[in-house]
Length: 114
Length: 113
Image (cartoon, rainbow over all chains, first blue to last red; front, side, top):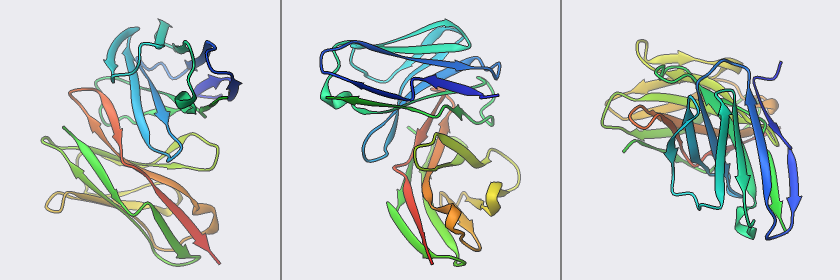
């Protein structure tokens, strides 16, 4: 069983398009995250949701809109894609209030904007 | 704010040699520290973590790390490198007040014959 699953794994699209990435976790965690990994492998948090509520928004452009229909899902919608959005996007989950519980990561979605 | 610094973006060792990947942290409160590994085209996998208690923590694949408060360090070591250890390694600190993991810039480990 995959703990944190993301779809699609690869996404190639043209500038200006709108795309979504889906994420689901079956660990029963109440906190989910989106991270962006750039071409230099640097990982930066974008959003964090706890029980479907946004708790972290790290100055991400408003073209990025996360949506959490329930605590097991956190989807990422991106409007008007730009070349600079090309990166690998990772979804993760953890259990809030348990700082010694690690975050579990999905396999990533490699987004290429052409 | 909490942060981590990884010294050396690229480390190369011979197979069988000692692996030492450096991580220093900055935290105003007792930190929770993690090491993650990322194999090519994969997600991140937890190697080990320090929260409280014993300062020497052992992880998977023969890796271990020691929390040294006086040096604000959490270096990752492995006595004998294997070819399969070649990957990107990330040190991270958990920021309790903001409930997020903050990652270092990563260290790419290369293992040569």
